[in-house]
Image (tube, rainbow, N blue to C red; front, side, top):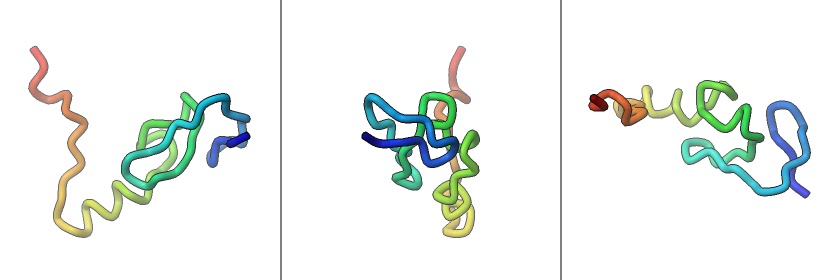
Length: 57
């Protein structure tokens, strides 16, 4: 059984981060909730993290 890499909570279903490929619980799944190194690497490579919520009405 997988566990959250941030808090150690046992997971029923894995929730992977698409930026760092880590496994997290529902509380830590978002990149900003687990201090995601993948997002930091995007800044260094010139890519910008985009949540996709900017264009919502």
